[in-house]
Amino acid sequence: MDPKSIPQISLNNGQKIPQFGLGVYQISSDEECEKACLEAIKQGYRHIDTAHIYGNEKGVGSAIKKSKIPRNEFFITTKLWINDFGEGKSIKEIDNMLKRLDTDYIDLLLLHWPKNDYVGAYKDMEKAYEKGIVKSIGLSNFHDDSLKKILNICKVKPAINQIELHPYAQRKDVREDCKKENIKIEAWYPIGHGNKDLIDNPLFSKLAKKYNKTNAQIILRWHIQEGFIIFPKSTNPIHIKENIEIFDFNLSDEEMEEIRKLDKKKMYVNW
Ligand code: NAD
Image 1: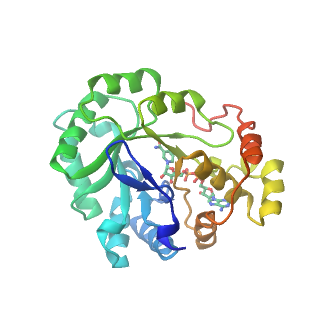
Image 2: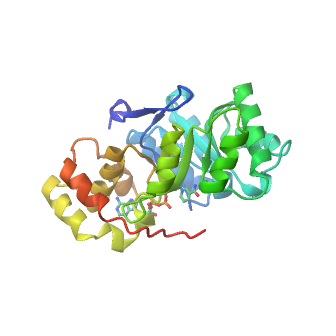
Image 3: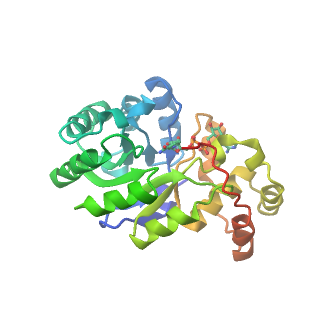
């Protein structure tokens, strides 16, 4: 896949993000992570979503170096973990992230969960943004009061909110709140963390047959047409290739609507 065929989404600060990438959650060794990233890069991926708590930022950084592709052709997201939240404390952790990622800037930095001193951590992210070592800042798993709190105190508006979102949990309330503020949505667990009950839904099987795609590709295409930013995770080269091959067909308006009707507010992670 030519990386240029992947749509770019404009953020509220003018930065652009590829709408599709690789997630590296639960790839616990740097070696395995590097291998998955290199396989994905070979298939045209240029966007990688990691986090301090995943323990594999070094693997992401080494894959980018080994690919020999210029750094500015990649979009790297990482997330501050809750133990590192606090004004004056988070900024030190951002320096550590740069070292682990072996880079001089992070494209997108998120607060992983609305816990502990997330206001202090957000202020440190704003400082890193002003210094230019972080190009965009945002949130993950924020909603209602935590989202309002950040919107009340921020000098730099969050560009992104990364939340659990798939056809069984379409998160309309958070999406509306974010839309009003021009905060773009990233969908984690885009295929429900591989959940069979979701992937094997007969509607996806019917559409997969029609378009000669797999059920997972139908779900991923639905996300793309909804405008969500996604980074399905896989270490399996067959799935890595399959997941990016979703830019050569279109679901109709009626089919999009049929998938919207599957929403049952079923989140796989409760918090
Ligand atoms: P996912 O929905 O991407 O599912 C991944 C799992 O589905 C894989 O482990 C694999 O078993 C299976 N799979 C992958 N491709 C497949 C295919 N084509 N066909 C069938 N099965 C396939 O779930 P995820 O990895 O947990 O989430 C994606 C990314 O979102 C993560 O890697 C991470 O970057 C991010 N994430 C963020 C948070 C957060 O709190 N911010 C939480 C969870 C995940």
